[in-house]
Image 1 (spheres, rainbow, N blue to C red):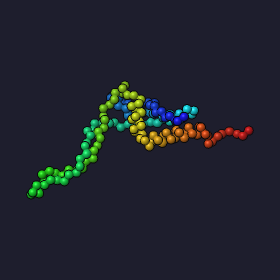
Image 2 (spheres, rainbow, N blue to C red):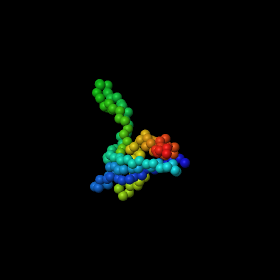
Image 3 (cartoon, rainbow, N blue to C red):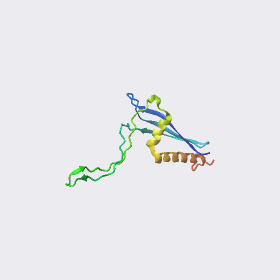
Image 4 (cartoon, rainbow, N blue to C red):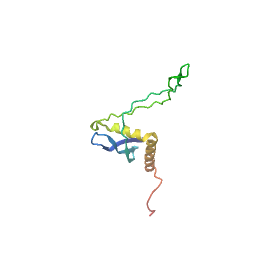
Length: 137
């Protein structure tokens, strides 16, 4: 059986004034049908602020008239910047799936892969131990 990894929220920390969740604890559990393993972690979130998306602007040289006067000033190139969603979801409306999504997004693919690989290694050790204890008599 393939290993399944389950992410759960153990606890959330929030500001009571507006319900903003600034962190919490999470678990990741691995189950291969025979053996189980798990890990607990803490994470913090930054508060999102309203930022209007900025559209990309290509650089343009100044436009001059026949006498060399600037008709249109030069424009510097500006890269696109995505907006940050600042609307808070009311604390009572949060779902575990939403917060797990936040955690996975904050961790990133590389950290998720490392967590899951470490848990898989623990399951593999349970399946085929490389160390043992005991006495021969």
